[in-house]
Image 1: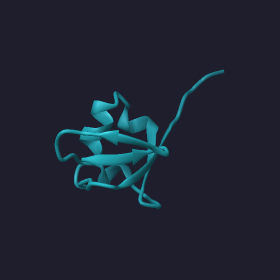
Image 2: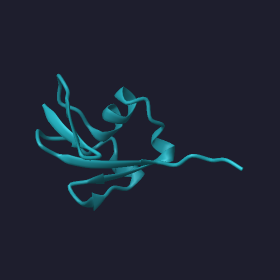
Image 3: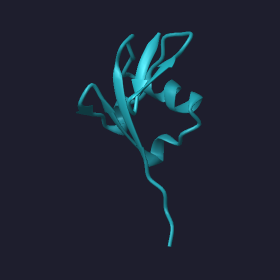
Length: 66
């Protein structure tokens, strides 16, 4: 399955939901905003939102600092 993540095509071997994708990418779901096909997702949707071949995602990671 191919996904477009932040403008870059990436291949994945198995069907995924958003939570599984974030785990594969080693991103903490509590600190990431996800846009799927131009729709902003709520964190509560990550487990139930299945990804399909060709989906476009924008992932924005929040980083704290001082």
